[in-house]
Structures are given as C-alpha cells and as structure tokens.
Length: 461
Image (cartoon, rainbow, N blue to C red; front, top):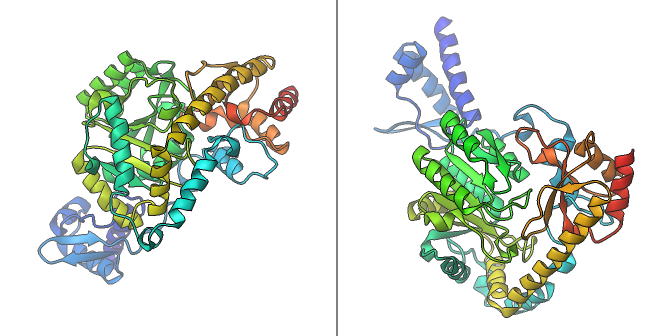
C-alpha cells in the first residue's frame, strides 16, 4: 500500500509539471535513478510510475534515450486562473473584448486601430481584383515556411533604408504580430522565467506572457524610454530572459526612446544576457525615424517584430519576425508545429502589392497629417475637461492622459461604456496598477462630439 502511494505521488508530480508547463511536449524526463534520488524513493517505484504514465499515453520511452512527454493529455491553459482575479475594468482583456464586440453604433476612443475611412480601401480593392486573376496555386495552396519572398524582400528594402543589412532568410512572416511574440516566447521562455516590460505597456503583452506562465517585471517608462536605474535593478534582481518594448511611439504613452537611453538599454542587456523584443508596429506613423534598438544592435541581441494591421488592414492579418538566423530556424519549426504554415499567401501578396505601389506612401503622408491635426484638436478639447496629456507624441494616434485628481479611470470607463463609448483605463496597461488616473485615447476615433460629452457627464457623476 505504501509503495502504491509513493508511485501515485510520483505520477501526480509528473502530471503537475506537465500541467504547469514546466515540462512541455518532447521534453525529456529525469532518468530513473536521478528521479529516484530526487524524490527519495527506490528506482523500482520510479519504473512503475513511468510505466503507468506510458500506458496512459502521457509519456513515451525511446530506446537508449529515456522517457519523453507526449503532450497527448496536455490541458489548455486557463488564463482566468492566472494571478489574482481583478475587476473586469482593469483586466487586460476588457478593452479588447469591448472594442471587438461593441455595437456598430458605439464609438471606440479606447481601441487600437484607425477608423475604416482612414484606411487605403481603394488600394486594397484594386489588389483584391488583381488576386482574383492569380493562378490556382496562390488561391488554394499553403505558403512556404518563411512566407512570401516578395513581401520579405520589401521588408529588406525598408531595413536597408535604416542601415540594417540582413538576408531574406532572417525574416519570418507570421499570421499576426501577436503570433510573432507568441512564437518567440515558445522558443525562448519556460514557465517561471522572468520577462521585463515597460510600465505601462501594451496590455496584450501582459495577457500573452501570463499565458506562458512567466513572471512579469514592470519597469517605469519615462518620456525618453525605460527608467534606466530601475531597468538595471530589475535585470540584477530578476535575471530576466526577455525585455519586450516599443522603442518608437510607445503604446500607450506615445513616447520615443532617446539615443542615450537606447545605448544604455543595449549595454545592460549585453551585460546581463537579456534578449530584447522590439515591437516596431508604429514605425510608419513617425514623421522621421527615431532611434531603434535593432539598428544599433544589428540583430545580435534584438529581435524585431511588426505587422501591417495599423497601417493597411486589421482584416488582412500578417506579422513578421526579423532575428538571428539560428533563432529564425527554431521559429520556423515552431510555426510549423503550431500552425503548420505561416500567413495566407493571398494576404501576404495583397500586402506586398499595396506596399510596392505609390499609393501607400501617399496614404501614410495623408494619415500622418490627419493625425497631427487630430492630436492637437483632441488635446485642446480634453484640456477643457482638465484632462492633460502626459506628453504630446511626435506621431501615432495615442494620447496618454491623466484625469483630475480623485477620479478613477476604470470607473469612468465603465460609466462611458453604458453610453456606447469604449475607453481604455490606465491600469489595463500597468503591471504595478499605478495608472489609476490615466486613460489612453485614440485621437483618430474622436472626431465626433459624443465622446467628449459622455466623458464630461461620467466625470461629473
């Protein structure tokens, strides 16, 4: 009976490690002798436990190599069980759900994309007509493992304009920018690892990292980038594997890293062995290019990701990863394992066609001009309500604003939602939950009078 209890304890221990992602599919289990020593049991008890797990299909033996996790009984991660439950108005999923599922009549100053009539729909329609005349392979087949060579070459040209020299094989196209980060996390992280993010940061960084069951370390973000003193302390104390950031037109603050801060971040990352994931999704919204960690580093320690959802279409999903060749090889394998293929060839060829045409440049010039006007106009109208921008960004569509003292942005957002206005409260973005009085506004979504009148009523209430 005692032996049976010990065997069941070992089985439970292995199952627990698999459930927590400490052991993943194809991971090797400890040898019989080593596991017996660790658990303080006889080797025969371990043999029996492994035999029962193998019979259930949880693990399998490979002759001469040991025992390996199969993943057959791997349960899906429950995001709602990760961390301390919070009020839904400060949940990283709240803004996304409200924005994506909102009634068509709702206005969305809290969302993260441009209005439909700001997008290059004429160019997309022209591209779709051209695609309809393509051969059957493009319309029906899977794409290559790295994605469209045409689109990757276009990205190479953009990188060359920044002074970055890479090969097409160092670029992997993905189904979205979010999938790009997910693949990187799968490649480089294990449950329990530490990851540094800005505080505040894009809320889906937090949601995705929670799914990977890592420890999230927030570093205060300043108008010139991460607080370097706090950043260094975090690297020393937590020994993180990754730092994930937006260097330019930071989400949600709109700030841009300074050259001095960029050099210090790279220096500290080198000393402490930290890999940097630089999300460059807002690059085309800048009037002129600002410092980039990938440019200064040359893809040694920095991985660049991006997508086309903000500038072209959120409906035609495609992202990319640019990194060291050996990392790209691992990421290609992971994309095959988890998605079999990359983004739709139709999507990538459509995007490539629009980017290569002269209409895209004109589109972005027009968008930058409209956003510059909208930022000034919205800042002035918010000032009437005593809502003050943290900074005035040099580009992009976000204003990170503080409410008058004593007001809770989460409460304001909840009240406005009842009147069909979706807002983004500050603590959605804050790891430390220290942005209670902040709201992120999308100025392109505030050309209507209604958000201001509803906001005014909510603040008075």
